[in-house]
Length: 331
Image (cartoon, rainbow, N blue to C red):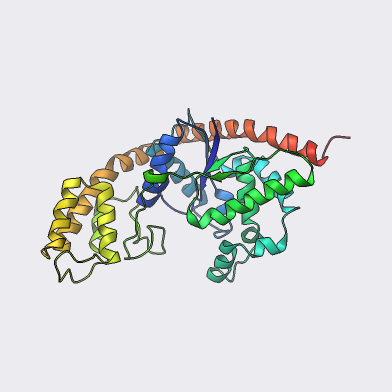
């Protein structure tokens, strides 16, 4: 079985985009691979260094992972900061990571534009921490989005560089895990782009959202004045609504509103009401399970502890061998 690793930053609740984009595939993937799923609380500090909700966010993500169907008895689920070996490998990789290549990272350039008053060393060395997360378990596959492909390429660079510098064939070069046709992209409610976290939270439907919140968000979703010609091409904002509907509604419902659109008889208000109810029907079991898990601190603590122990078993072997290769040994 191949080792697969994926992580998510605890900067807020998970949304439908996370669920269809990754979580439902993780559930299938854990049965076919040796999977490590971690909650990247160290990573979140690069943008939220003084977060007052970090602990709560970590807890929420753990509960949402479990509610979505990730099984801690099959996969390894752990919190990044519970694995000190990651921090040590991060330090060692930084010794052989060069300033120029780190400054050229697209994500670093984007971040210094978006947070010019918080350009910290963690932002600069984000790729080496991500690399440490991956190769600490010698993972060979990593499910990543388009925005993370450069980081994965840098991980391969760091792995090759370590192997070359110390004349070993130790770290594998991980590749992107492609879900292929199983990957469903969920657009946002603002009329463009993908569903994601925003300052207002109105661009995404979160798994924990209450029905009244879902209805309010959907009714505010961007639309237009309606079609003026039969079978005309849908603008992006309308195509977005249909894309969400295809994910949560029955094929008959989608076909019904598609026909109304093509005949210029669609009423977006009716479509939004139907879409909101279908989303509520889809998310309610997940929301109820999340709430149940969040109330069971003992179980969440047990899962986190068990995950840390399993991850430590894998990581401690790697870091022991890395120390020996470098020459860090007891006198």
